[in-house]
Length: 160
Image (cartoon, rainbow, N blue to C red; front, side, top):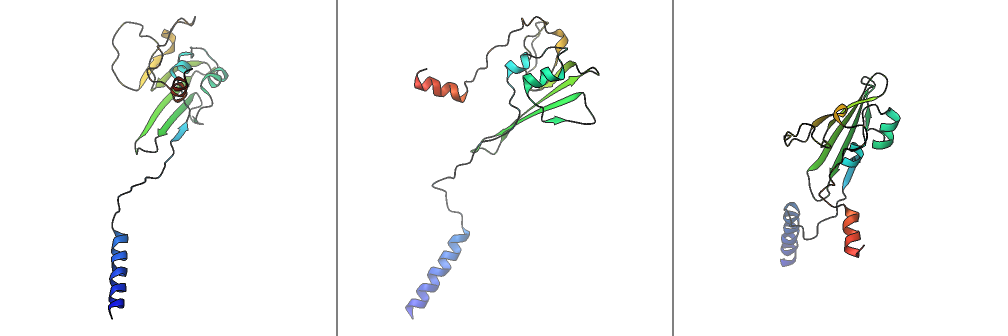
């Protein structure tokens, strides 16, 4: 008579323990999910007013969204979700053209190459840059980004 009671107790214990939350000793690997166009500040600084659509496509790549109702506007979107985090980093960048297909202005998560009036700009992510205020001879310089990339860190660890 003790075996059926013991078997019933073990079965009830297994059923109850299956409903509880067990701490994960080993966590599963989750990949980083990257979507959209990766735009660097160097790419954005190459944009000048009057560039054609083909030249902009060569510099920035194919846009994520070309709306048929707004043919003179290209939207570039970037999203990066780290596997170990639930928060996603997103970036938006919009390029506007005139009726002749020439670049007029850009907006989005960019930093201007150099402020023209010396004023301190507010620390917001979304800015509109008037490309007409940038010099056309390519003399505007962009400071290098602060953070190192993945391959830079690997090359530095190897000693190159």
